[in-house]
Amino acid sequence: MPEFKWRWAEMPQYWMSFVDGLLVTAQLSAIIIAGAIAGGVVIGAMRYSRRRIFNWPATAFIELFRNTPILVQVVWFFYAFPVLIGGQLEPFLAAVFGIGLNITAYSAEIFRGGIQSIERGQWEAGRALGMSYLRVMRRVVLPVAVRRMIPAFANRMIEAVKATSLASTIAVADLMWQGEQLANAIYRPFEVYTSVAIIYFLAIYPLVLFTYGLERWLRIEDEVQL
Image 1: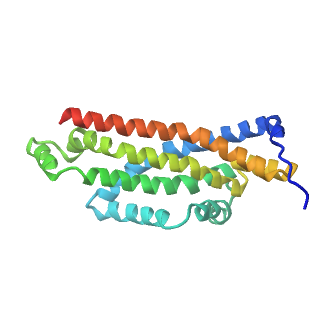
Image 2: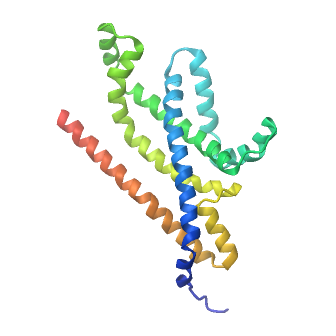
C-alpha cells in the first residue's frame, strides 16, 4: 500500500475559494439571524397569546418546524415548494427559508419562555397602575425578559451559523460547497475538509467567546442589582 503524502502546502493557493465561500456563509447567516429574531418575537408573542386565532397558527408553525429536520426543510423548499408556487426558487433563497424558518421556530419558543418566566405579580402590578397589556409588556415585562433570553438567543444564533453548511446540499456556494468542489477537483479531501473545519472554527469561536462574556456580564449585573 503506497504511503499517503500530505500536501498542506497546496492549500494556501486556494484561499480565494475559501474566502468566497466564507462570504456567502456570512451573508446567509446574517439574513437568517435577522429574520429569526424578528420572526421569533412576533410568533413567540402570538404563541403566548390566549386568543386561539393567534395561538393556534403560531403553535402549528413552531411544532412543524421544530419537529422536522433542517435538511428536509431545505430540500423541501428547493425541490417541493416550487411545485406549489409554479416557479423555481434560487438555491440561496430556498436555504434562507429552510434554515431560517427552523431557527425562527426555536427563537419563538425562547421568546415565549422568557415572557412566561416573569412573575405574575409584575403583570398584576402594571395592570393595577392602569397600564394596557401592550404597555405592561413594553415597560415591565420585556426589559426583564429580554435579559433572560439573551444567552439562549446567542446560542441559537451560533447554531444558525453552523446550520448554514446544509445549504451546500442544494448548491449554495457557501464555505462547505466550495470545499466540496475543491476536494473533487484536486482529490485531496483530507486537507480540504480539514481546512474547511478550521475556518468554520475560527469564524464561530469568537461568537462563542462573546456569548460567554455576555453571560458573565449579565450575571454580574444581576448580582449588583441584588
